[in-house]
Image (cartoon, rainbow, N blue to C red; front, side, top):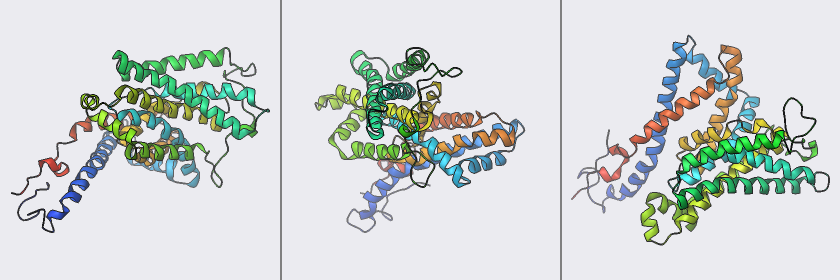
Amino acid sequence: MTLEANSHTLPTLDGRAGSLRPFLEWLARRAEPLAITLFAIFVGLALFSLFIALIGRSPIQLFELIFAGGFGTWFSVQNSLSRAAPLLLTALCVALPARLGLVVIGAEGAVVLGGVAGAAIALPLVGDAPAPLVWLIMALAGMLVGAVWLGFAGFLRHYRGVNETIASLLLAYIAIAFMNHLIEGPLRDPASLNKPSTAPLPPDYMLGSIPGMDVHWGLVVGVVACILSWVLIEATSFGFAARIAGGNVRAAQIQGLPVGRLIVGFTALAGAFGGLAGMIEVAAVQGSANASLAAGYGYTGILVAFLARHNPLAIIPVAVLLGGIDASGGLIQRRMGLPDATVLVLQGTLFVVILFCETFYGRFKMFNPDLWKRSA
């Protein structure tokens, strides 16, 4: 089915139908990302169902367990929200640079270094400063380290021509190795025998839960970060300049826009959110910096950002959805005898299909007003 403007539907811009054309164009352009994303999810689930059926398991039972494990009970919902909290911030690590046409996939590096920085700076302050002040200092330290780490990838992209995708990914591997060196060496707590880590934070210095919920405050921080990022992109001159540069870098340079500062600034801001995610994992979940910081939140954030079409507001429901899928892994393992990593296979399938469906944008007449026939 296609939309076609002719003498019977949109005769003139002065007529009643013609006056609806701006709204129809707006609706068509906004509907395209939603329609293609939903189609990609449907195809990805269908392919994964085929895979499950081929190994002798019931796809229907699998999806029932995913729903039950992620959203079936209040406990499941809270578990999903807790897992979604870091995804909100790591997805912004991908979504913000994407507005400049950059593909940055090294959020994992910012997460682990942000967590280590937060833990390292907090320990000397414990007992001498109130908990809220310690949290603030931890957050600033984590954000600063994450900003420098991913901002360096933006610097290499603009000033040295290094591909930001490769640079950010390699920096992530370096960051994980550096984290392991620190927690197994200079920052290691002598009491951590089996699992090297920094000294644990006292219970009074752990980030508590939202009242009435068993979900830490990192969820609120992530939601606020997504809202502020949307305001930055859509309602500020800085965000407008970034969108112009993302559409056509050469045109932005001709207009005198500071493309270099935009690239470094947005990658640094993305890294700051990743570092904040790592700090929250330490202060709210782990209690110390250890190897569990490299839990893959940075890589899952890539899928969240692409599913949300790099829209900071759309990241919120998508992160909750992916958090629910991740939370159901243990239930699937117990009930169906499948590995806990089954949900990772599902996420990978969805990601591949979504990338494939990127080629569909702009091809359907019903979503592209530029292809509609205009009346004389």
